[in-house]
Image (cartoon, rainbow, N blue to C red):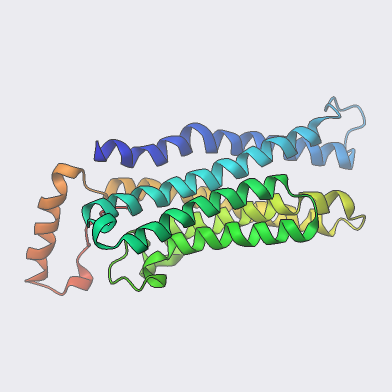
Length: 247
């Protein structure tokens, strides 16, 4: 059961998120081609821009949702194993409230129209993702429940995921500004943010595959950890690959 739950996050990413990325990129390219009118005989439908926005909003919701799912699994799995619900009820309630507040903030961000409300809910949603991701630092816990690869942040599935989630949240928030700005400054920002997000999505595919190969199955974990302990007796632990419990 534990191994099955570990696969839910990458399975949804492959089945839902990455196909949506391809659709959004296709609509984005068609929208730009129609706007530039590179070919006056082109047969690009006039509603392609509207469809690009609609699918883009769904992509943002899928990315934030799968990010929350990816953070929730190791968090509550570790909470159950460490009996945090009975021994640390305050921290457990805090984390549950943070998950609920983050989801609620995203819902309100979708519904908000005034600029300041969109800015507030963008900040709250982003802050919720960061607090959950770095919960051990905020709660001053000695052991992190979410595997982050802090020493390799530049090639970390966690850091790439947090960064691309924040970029998608900001991209969602600035959509109304794109249509109001005659100078196309916000449109340029939107393009830059999403090009960066695309690179991070590619990195997510690579780092996610690597982490799946490194995470031992539940029946293998005790043997891998024992092997790690034995290797530490013959050479420094910082040069031995430490087993991964959760991403």
